[in-house]
Image (tube, rainbow over all chains, first blue to last red; front, side, top):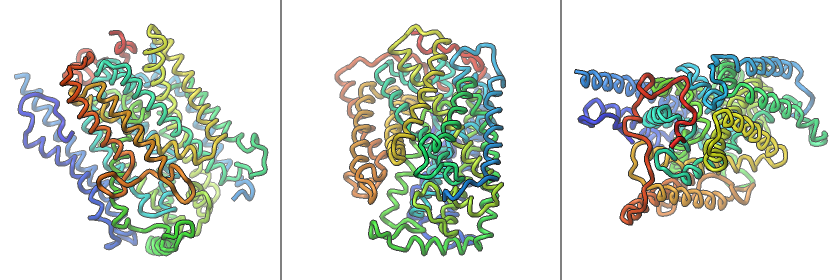
Length: 84
Length: 542
C-alpha cells in the first residue's frame, strides 16, 4: 500500500517514488527500535529515547505534508493533461 | 485520597460541565439541514464538516480521556514500554493518507455510512459485512466503558467518588448524572454535539498540557531531576515479579514488543467505527488528506502528556490504582482552581469520544444488522430512530458494565477489542485497493484471527491476573515477544491469501461488486457525489 494507484497511465513516476518514500520513512525509523533505545545524548534532561521519538512527530508531519503537496501537484498535472 | 471534597476544583469542574451541556443541546441547531430525519444528518452531521471541525472531531475522538489517563499511567507503572503510544500515533497518519481518501470517495458515491456498508457493497457478502459490524460493536463497547473509568478516576480524586462504605447510589450518582446528560444530548443532536464540544475539550486539554509541562518541571527541579528520580524508582525490584519495576529505555528483549505494539495499534486505529464516523462526516477527500498533515499535533501533545508519568513518580505520587496517578499529580501540584480545569478537561475528554463511539456503534447496528437482516425496507426516518435508540442502549450497557463489574474487566475487553478490530483490516483496506480477495477467504481469515487472538490473550498471565494479563506474547516461529493483535493479523492475511487461491481454483461464486474503479477517486463536486444530502439508502437499493 506504499503508493496509491489512482490513475492509469504510467503508474510509477519519480514524483510518486518520492511520495512513497516520504510515507515509508516513518515506519523504518520508528520500527527500528534498536536505533534509538538509549539515554544519551539527552536534551534539557530528557533522555534520547523520548525526545528523539517526539522529534519524529515533527519530521513525519513534514514528510506527510510534502507527500500531500506532491500528490496534489501530481493530480493537477494529470487532470490538466487529460483535458488537453 | 478521599479525604474530603476539593470544593474549588469541583466548582470549576461543574461550571465547565454545565457549559458543555448547554453547547451539546444547542448543537442540534448548528448548520442544520432540511432533511433532519436521515441517518446522514444525525449520524454523520450532514457530512458537511470542513478541515478544522474534522480536525477537532478526530482529535477529540482518537485521543480520549482514557488515553490521557492510561498513557501516563503506563509510563508511571513501567517506564519506556508505555511510550509506544507515540510511535503508534506517528505511524497512523502516513498509513491513513493512503487509504482513507479512497474510503471517503466510495462511501460518498454510494451513500455508505459504515465500513460494513462498504464491505457488503464491495464483496456482495452480507455475512462478511455482518462479521465486520459485530466486530466493530464488540470492540467499541468496552472502549465506551473505559471513558467512564476515566471520569470515575477524576471524580475519585476530587473526593466525590465516595469511600468504600458509602451507599452505591450516592457513590455512583455523579457518574450517572454525567452519563444521563451525555445520553440526552447525543440523542437530540447526534454527531453535531460532540463536534462542537470537541472545541471546548481540546482547548482545555491544550491549555492544561502547556501549563503542566512547564509548571510541574519547574516545581520539581527540571527534567534532569525528574528522570533521575524515575530511573531510581524503576530500578527497584518489584516484590510481585522479582524483576525491576521498569526501565527508562526498552531493553533488547522489549524492542520487538515495542515495535509490534506500535505497528499493530496504528493499523487498528482507523478500523474502529468511531474513527470512520468522524472521517466520513468531512465534506471532501481533501479535508482528510489535509487532516493527516495537521493531526500529528495531537501526537506531540500525547508525547508531552506521557512525560507526566515520570513527573508523577518524581513528585512522589503514590497510588495503588495507576489510573489515578495523573489526576492525583494535578491535585498535588496545581492550585485548586486549575486542578478543576484539568479535571474538567479529562471529564469532557471522556464525553466526546463516548458520544461518537455510541453513534458509530448504533450506525453499525442499524445499517448492517437491523436493515440487512431484520427490516430490509426500513425508511431513512426509521433508520435514524433505531440508531438513536441503539446509541442510548449502547451507553446504558457501558454504564452497567462499569458499575457492576470490576474495572479490570473493561480493560481486558478493551485489550481484546484492539486485537479483534485489527482483524477487519484485510476486508476493509484490502477491499479499498483490490477485489482480488475472495469474500469467503476474508471471512475465514477473520475467524482465524479472532480465535487465535482471543485464545492467545486468554493465555497471558500477569502477577495480578491469571488471564488477559497483557497484550503481548511469544510470536510463533520467531520466538520474540510481540503484540498478539499483529500476530493474529498476519495469520489472518496468510489464511485469506491461501484460501483465495483455493477458492478461485474451485471457481467459488465471487459475489457482486457494486463499485467501479473511478468511485474510489471521486471527489466532492464530481457527478454522483452528493456532499450535503446523499440518499441514505443508495447503498442498499440493489
